Image 1 (cartoon, helix red, strand yellow):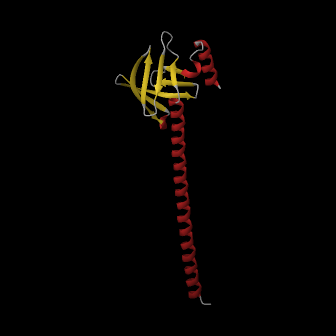
Image 2 (tube, helix red, strand yellow):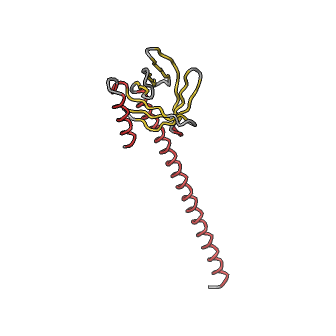
Length: 163
């Protein structure tokens, strides 16, 4: 074979290899893009599920505020984002909003909105920390613990928080 034919075949081989290399790179990019789409979708589903679980705990019962020793304060979070705060039998209406990306909640009462981080939430206890003040609100399930002594409830709350 003559040198021109070999050079021509070499160029054709390089073009074919380049073509397949470009296709392979495009497929790899597509796969990476699809993986990131799936990853983003999974993240969104996890956040949505986490929000629904937290909201289910929150709206599943009424919550007594344990920080108050002189009177009973009961928070009732409704599924439509309404909040009822009952103090000595008098009901005050407010609202709340989850911020699931930040694991926090906005509570609005008397036209004032306060921002709390959700430290811990279960079927028995709810721990909220007010932003910038480190004020901690400890709530307990009103139905489960309404007849229990406050010292016993706070002991259970601390035990659950530490576990």
